[in-house]
Amino acid sequence: MSKIKKHVSALGPEYSEKMKSRYAEKVKPSGKIYSKTDRRENRVTADLPAESLQEEKNKFAYQGGCLCGAVRFSISGKLRHVINCHCGQCLHTHGHYAAYTSVDKKEFQLVNDGGLKWFRSSNEARRGFCQECGASLFFERLGGCKISIAAGMLDSSKGLKTVEHIFVADKPDYYEIEDDLQKFSQYYNR
Ligand SMILES: [Zn+2]
Image 1 (cartoon, rainbow, N blue to C red):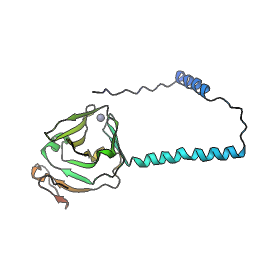
Image 2: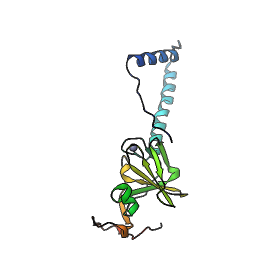
Image 3: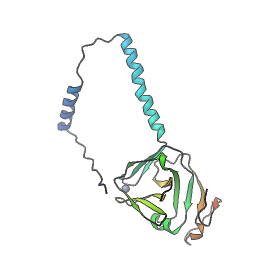
Image 4: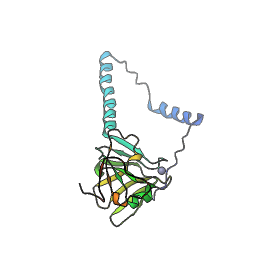
């Protein structure tokens, strides 16, 4: 099990001295006198990193993580709309019904898994949680190609909406489902 790396930021005069000496080693005046053409060429190449930076940003359409940040993830693909699950397992790990979105594992990337622990919740599935802050983040069918992500873990849920309820047969008495969304007594296969 991997331990969380504590980030100790080295600041202060010692740090800047170190950086200064590093900088001094790398950047030496070339003595070259730049012409107008050189400047134009520089400008063209200088534009490229900015573009690829934007591409990189677009590649990760969604980002998210747990309360403490020891689990962070990025999603490059399209997320499924949110489904509320009222099953007993979700109630017992989330403290209430669960709102899950889902994505193909190929389009899901863990950015920080320092706090991630998996709990084998049944013969068919496991649930991922943060062992530092206790957040319940993921649900995964063993051997499946999708990963379900608790929607509240997303930094932004732009474009997502809740579309239906599943396992309503297991719903406890203390709340009612009062919207008009489709309800399934158990799971459904789509
Ligand atoms: Zn955490």
